[in-house]
Image 1 (cartoon, rainbow, N blue to C red):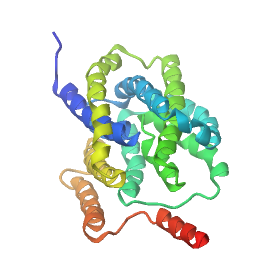
Image 2: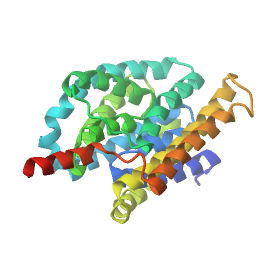
Image 3: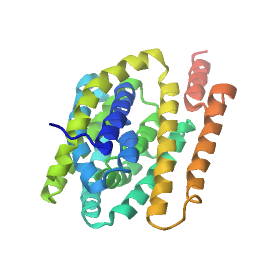
Image 4: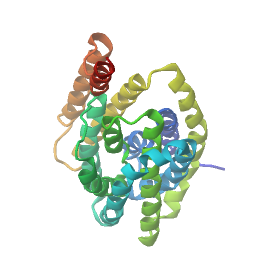
Length: 298
């Protein structure tokens, strides 16, 4: 008989929602799952389970978008080169750093990326070839410690103007590499424990249900609107998790620490209002490119 505790039930629910997002956009599973799951499980237990699951998910994404692999191969190679040392560093931190402080660092690092996506930030990186390897180093370190890499990678590939299928292929390629390298590093460090493997049980069925649901949902909404809603949810959860962690580490007392959460909510509501009501915070890089193309055609 399976014992279903609160943490396991919540993990299934959030994994189902995150899998739906991942099915629609090609990323978002970890960035949505981790902030909630960290309220019940430590990084050291959660991360190995997510790595095993994401290896299968990302492989499937690459297979689905294999026609665009040739177009993004040169773009992803420098990132892959930077991944390996970053994953080694991140895996070492995961096995040696205090769990509470690691959780705090996780929230602080990913919150700006999520808010940038919620704001529709677009700015082309002109020196992409030179920046790719350092980006890979940072992404590898972040992924090995938190299993999160979607927000920074999505910002990079979105800003570079990749088409949807190219975007998914590039993201999937990098994430297959990082999950494979990370799984090897975790195994070498002995991080695959029985408790970690048990967490695969509630996550796997959530993926089987959520991934096709997400594919269907994308047909009903524009990808930009869907992304805003998902990242807004993520921002609210990260803000709550950050407030809770600050209390746990005795950096601030309750209820003062929850002012962080309220500030995140207020800022995100402002972004949502601007996007849905006034049309602010819409990406303009593509609009400028369209105008230039029309002018050149004329």
